[in-house]
Amino acid sequence: MSVWIIALPVLVLVAAGTLALVRRRGRSALGVVVALDAALALAALVVLSVAVAGGSASAHPAVAAAAQQGSASSASWAALLGAAIAVAGSSVGAAIAVAYTGAAALAAMSERPELFGRAMVIVGLAEGIAIYGLIVAIILIGKA
Image (cartoon, rainbow, N blue to C red; front, side, top):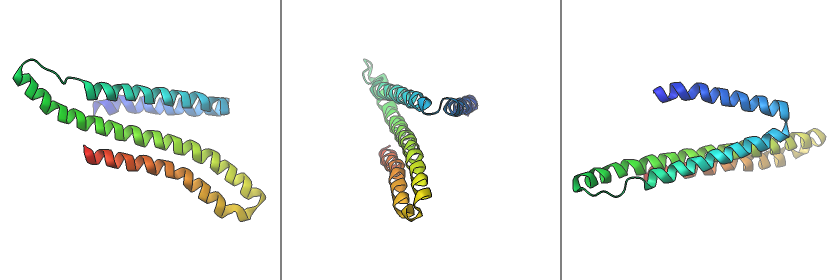
């Protein structure tokens, strides 16, 4: 609970800063946001690999038994972290895809209204990216 008390204001500040950056800089800020997203994904991958590989060998049998019992919860934690990364990454990708395809669809429909069906299919395909991430997360949670 205390983690959320700290993380929520930080998350709100980051979201507000990102929104202000995108409004002020436009398309050039999108590259910065994508680069930060890639850096966060790489950091999450490092944390995941450390969590999965950590604490597997021990010299004392009692400590080894405790480590084996703890590795099950570590693997469960790693699966949940992987599920969170899958959902977050696919949601960000889908949001970017829908932003561009939605804007293009609205521009096309303003000129030719009969393109509504085709435009919505393209936007729906972009939304499918988020569904793929959700499916991967459900599979990972089922393995935990």
